[in-house]
Length: 427
Length: 171
Image (cartoon, rainbow over all chains, first blue to last red; front, side, top):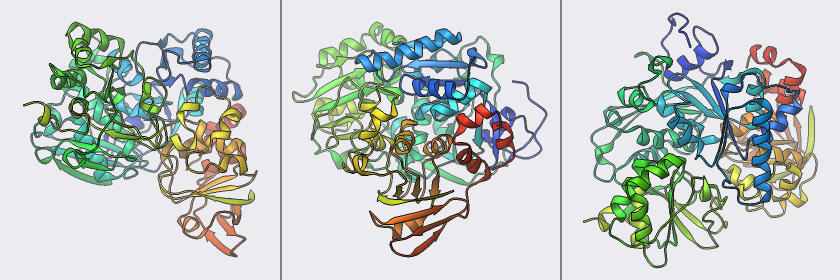
């Protein structure tokens, strides 16, 4: 996307990306804009509704099929006849409309689309899935919307958006041992609150993030929505560009915030003082040090999801589980986020580690995260999960409980049969 | 645009998993989903809510998943509007995109009890508690949101071809 001259006022990353897509020189938070969307995404739950809205709005032919992706990831591999029908409907729509970016059993959208370099710096990406904000890790403005918004973009290529205020987050210090990106973002959500960033964009900065891998950055951007944020955006650096690959580097529009841009709030976090944490039921902001919950016995551990189902996450869990056994009354479910992550973990012998420890490896899927399939909880059961939400009844029975944690804490908890600090397990 | 109905009361952080649990989302048919609306919080709600009734809730209503099924089932049950102290943003846009009015009014949450009769005057920005004889005011809706409600949602606005103008004419 060509730069349309220099903006006259200082802008945040979110403001710059939106201004460019709304073809405006400047804009202000609170303003309503019609913006050109680079890529949309819908899944097996939200695409069928979008298809209905598309038809209802009189849609015949989508605007630009190459800007549309459909990723079947929630109930896939199809768990029953109705979910198979939803996927069939989406598949047929893709065929009818010439949509090539249609994926089924390839993996979870928020891991898959970045892996394929289909999302990148400077883009405006909208997905009918609240965790679309994950792509902000690549310096995109990416936001979750509804199915009708997606239908509108299919028809017109456009979306209505309110320009968000931005909160600047600064992470300093060298992270303490066993403190991961998950712990950083859970601490941030606890500080901001579940609606502390409602209607706003988070901008992630600081020396503690500069050495973080893309995988760790995805984990953080992914959970921006748990503070209510519209987007969570990282600056683009060498790590971003290396992740996207050498080819086509020039295709990305690298956006930086102006030094004197206006932020509605600024927060600073010292990662050297953080400890591994767990978000206790039923809120991602209900964050406590692992030690405080060490008496909580668990029946299940889930390692996977769009938050923590990538290579680095699996390696971290395997490091804790290698040569150890999952506690007798505990189930360990590992769900690599994409097929290529699954294959890489297989090559590295990591899947073997999980299996020998007494765990089981499931196909790429959102799985139990939203109570779909592959590990639903019974009444009274408790689960330590590397997923992103611990809402009431999210993973099964309304009287079950979810404790959100990093892959290291999840793996240690699987060994201990209760919430555990990795240090208790790894000497 | 005046709506009159009974109040159903909910608390803070009512997420879309509670409005319509994902375990049922194997169909996009809202009439099949509607009987499960808010069932984990108030098992009576879906079976007893009447056309024109209003949902009154606390902070951050509709947080979590982007599923448009959530405002969709409320609307298909006949809920006229949701009045809350605040709304999570995806739910907020989804509600208006479907033509379901969402009103921010902290006073209603504090004063209204389950079963009381309410009258909502959208244009005037007034909510009247007929049972208690009280008046609560709220900020009138932005112009574009009002246009979405009047059109019956974004799909209707798109079909009519007027959405570009509606949006560009301001918030």
